[in-house]
Image: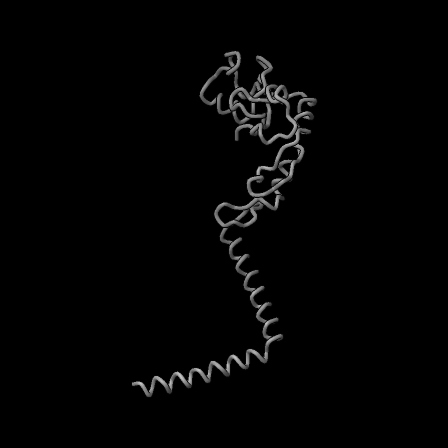
Length: 180
């Protein structure tokens, strides 16, 4: 997955944006790694994809392979982790802004993490069929509960309705019998 869209970050200056942008995907670094040949930083996925088709660094064109990539300095990782980012489910209504280092945990538990196919909350091991069966079971339990409440509150009304229905059937039947 390429880097994070810069628009998702809150309070990121243009200078910060320029310093934290991957030169391959032009987004903010996601899982940054450093090429030892030029000390340039890239998103891990971007540079690994690049190196599948090229044997040189995209920045200085020196020989480069995946084994020569390293993690950035801890200070850099700390700065990245403190950046404030909007939840990836903001289009589903999530208003949360969290530190980048907490984004993965937030996304896993975000109540706006809706499955595009079944519209259920997605979690680890999401199964649309099982989720829809669970929704159906809950709906059936609610219907039964409402039916029980209605029956206890309206038992006289229900008897009246049944009596009316039976009387209507007798009238309709005798009316139809006389027409034929």
